[in-house]
Image 1 (cartoon, rainbow, N blue to C red):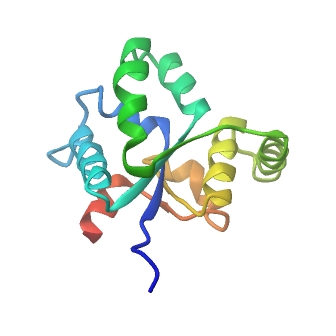
Image 2 (image 1 turned 180 degrees about the horizontal axis):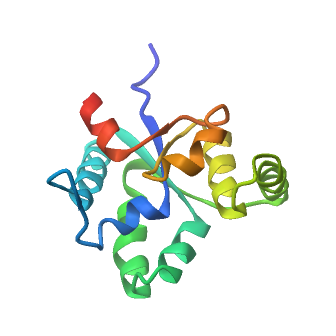
Length: 148
């Protein structure tokens, strides 16, 4: 009998930034929802995936480098999580996706990473991602939590 298969979650940088920012929507602190997903991953419910580009995006968006290196990276790699590194094939795929669907290259790169790793993209940027839903599943942290 096969072991318990975890749902793979590819977290985008906007979702991870909500851990640092005191943002609220509909009376809910957005960072708390992301923290809940990470807690559930630590308990073995999910496998968390991020790419090497996510760390650079977080720093560019104002996250302190120390936070990314000393807190976020170790937290992301809990329980079989992976830090994904782009190779030539992934970059070419992202360039094609970016041109075809007219989305930013880094956004396309995240889609290709998720697709190649059979992961669900966890994002709040639904408007940009709607065009690429045929490549990877997309959900917000709030929708994922509500599914329980």
